[in-house]
Image 1 (cartoon, rainbow, N blue to C red):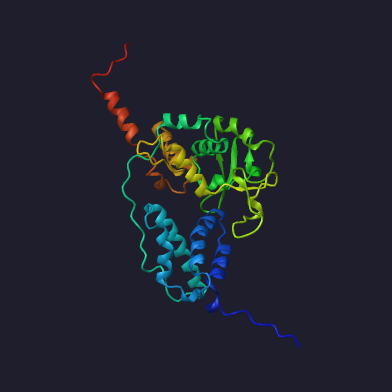
Image 2 (image 1 turned 135 degrees about the vertical axis):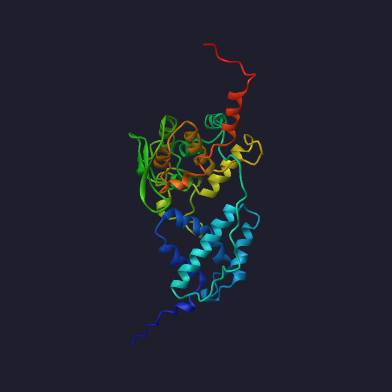
Length: 313
């Protein structure tokens, strides 16, 4: 007679197992990867606890890591915990809300977030930077895409003839982003004969085993290197742009998308055209991108300066 043990009841499920099940239920790759960073810290701190015993103190310990981060960063990680909590409550794993004591932070009002075109040109043409990074930066600007979308690109997603790439958007839809001549000229040098695998690769070979081993789909079959991560790409960009930033702290990858749309708006592109380029579902979402800022103010002032030399007719 063989005795088959019954699976443990849901209320006894460990946090690490519950997190794994939750991440498996997230359909969008970019969202899953973003949430995984937060929930990995949760499992590191409370992974061996029964999930139904999670308390506000556990969530507070997770968020302590980003206590000094910008409001957008804090809110992004808090959203991951809230989403996991909502799922766990639907699964009847959690009866209470461990996130109830945590609050979203209000972002400070910021001025013009666009990067001046002259500084972008200097950045894109500076050969001291890694070719991979210059391709990523230029592609982000020319496509006005989200960084997560381009970092998730595989070589198979590229359509070099029509200068476009197939991405999975924020809502999970399959869409195309389009780049210009600058990216088109650099891409063949970046590919170097590679035909499959991630487009943007990390500097080192991916570990074959252990907790840091990536999925097989995130490893280049030709080089054995893993996919470039968002945190690493963001760090490299901020480091490279610190000298160009008047504040000396460097810019973010998202500012390339912001700059592209704001520059197009300054050039007179209509709201529907900007919506097509950015792939926002609602025109209202474009508001923060089309508010022309400091560069436009400076140009208007210079054009209206009565002491400026007037053109002869």
